[in-house]
Image (cartoon, rainbow, N blue to C red; front, side):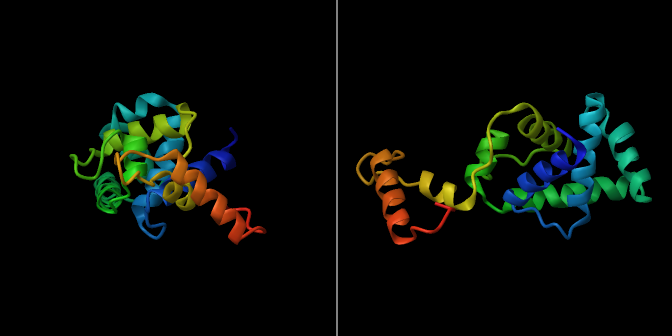
Length: 159
């Protein structure tokens, strides 16, 4: 992937995690993932390498970088976006919040190594339909909902 494609993929994933683009932590995470993609050992030395490299780029201190990333991770974790949290981090918001290092590791693996994609809001709604009898995901209800949605909005390409 080229640089622009990587940035778009990272931002798209963070947006689906409900990360605020206005927070400094958002920019630090994007840049940090790009740095990790260049050299994966940076994530192992998060304090001595990654934070310092991000801080130098943004002309701030490493402690400021750490705090802003932690605040963004906290905001993502409390957004209660269960489906996506489970998909990327293999845990729900009810579980322990990942450390910054774990956050980078899981997000890097998901974006750069995984073939999965984060569902859009409409895909997430369709896939979360539970059968009223067995309380499992229901293919029949999902198919019916998809069919009805297409019939109601025949020109819509989002369904």
